[in-house]
Amino acid sequence: MTEMKRVYIETYGCQMNVADTDLIIGLLGRSGYTATDSPGEADVILVNTCAIRDNAEQRVYGRVGELKRYKRPGDVMGIVGCMAQRLGRTLLDRVPHVDFVAGPDGYRMLSELILRAGDGERSAEVGFKSWEHYEDVPPVPSNKVAAFVTVQRGCNYRCTFCVVPMTRGPERSRKLADVVREVERVAASGTTEVTLLGQTVNSYHDGVRDFADLLRAVGEVDGIRRVRFTSPHPNDFSHRVIEAMAQVPEVCEHVHLPMQSGSSRVLKRMLRRYTRESYLECVDRLRAAVPDLAITTDIIVGFPGETEDDFLATDSLVREVQFDNAFTFKYSVRDGTPAVKIREHVPDELAGERLERLIGTVREVARRKNANLVGSTHEVLVEKEARRGGLLQSRTRANKIVLIEGSAETIGSYRLVRLTGTTGSTFTGVPVAGRELAVLVE
Image (tube, rainbow, N blue to C red; front, side):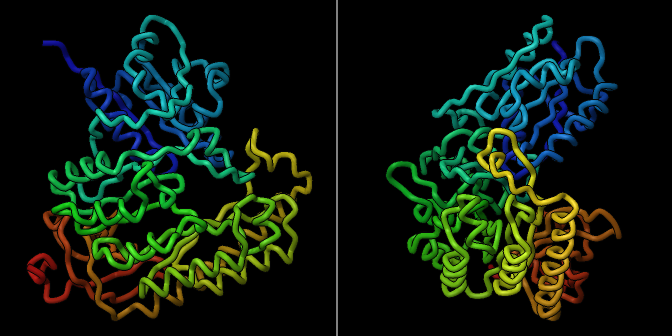
């Protein structure tokens, strides 16, 4: 009997990359590969990469250098994902011990690329394929409690700072029926929560059905209790989409709504296609339709030409919206993006100082909001064992992390918990009457 070859994958970046790693395991499984958690046991080592910021790419270079020590004679190493797509064959020149690179549309070729590498050929597969959705390949989910389901690939927006159009290609959506079939497979495996993924997920349209239709269809799948989605664009929250969010009980009360800047002048330079005022109007419409909606966001500081007044506009918008959390970043120059041509660069030291001030504001707002939740009761899904303290990590519908006591056997179950304390970002909680929510509601 032929021994199955083993593949080890490290994943960096967004949820889309996590979903792509599950897809890669499914693809390679059809060619006789099995996944391993140890690079030392692997015949094939893959690094699934992010290209959104320079420090993400530098981290990959460092990690690939560390993984080199696990590569035995006959083993194969590849870099896949957005960084591979952006740099292509250049990566083979920069990293001599890497045998091949493959972009997000090239995963169907992985088995062949591995075989070529075994024959000493170094290859790059980075062409865009507008038809590729990997519909015939069931992913092998790494998370049995909550699943990622890709519904859309690529992006038609052309934000001046962003490399996604160069690494993921033009926007294209899967057929609604195909997405529903995948969600049905997820539910049949016992998973009850799905997150729908797309670069601008709420612009989903398969030619007949839009994102509102998709939310309703996924919410109707037997066994699915929670539906999340990320990342939407503020311009694509139509009345139909917001109405579906409000009417479909499975859709969770949380939205990640990228802001990027609170200054209309900077937003125009970013080509975000909305203003400060229209962003606030989107927030108002969402909150009017979905009571107690939690809103998180992405923010960039130090974009070329950003003045102190522009930064203060961003800081004040964080306070006005009252975000539950924010992912904050210094602007990172990305070769090939239009923003490279803007010469009014903000000094790195000044951008760093602004970032620290913004983080302080985000934490202050989140801490105050979270403190007001202590004592309230919420439904949580128990996700996994926490990193420390012998506790379990669970999550509310509003995407708040709650640490509770309990045994590993309760992972995957729903409970009612009362929030007993907060660090400002996460919570501690105790189960109400010690009973599973599934028992209380059935």
